[in-house]
Length: 160
Image 1 (cartoon, helix red, strand yellow):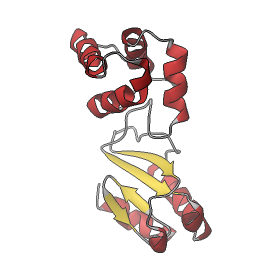
Image 2: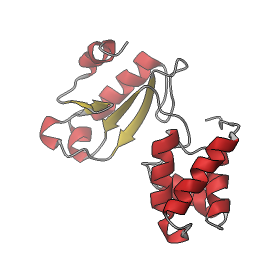
Image 3: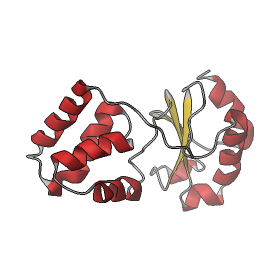
């Protein structure tokens, strides 16, 4: 995956500084700072992580380590319609892998990528708590249960 380089505006740096100050620039609040910053910007590229590290007076390596450890955080922008496929045990056993392959084929992207038009991004989750509906696919806040590979084209068509 290629890394994305962005140029932060002065206002972006100020916004990050204010988020850090909300948590008293406390290193122990790093996860909360990251959550709030990702809510604001949509993702956490290296340039944003650098500003957070500076404001919390900690190493960029530590910030990066937390961002890459937790699957909730993303370093690439999500698509307008983020797709998540549950690959937890129940979904996996009931064919989530085949659904995932069909989504990848239809959109011509891999997990962790966004379509060139910025419409869709693809990720996997461990469990969405809808095991009775396995396999489960989510697009944004909308949940689709008992999805078969044959359903994928129709589901994606709702968002095109």
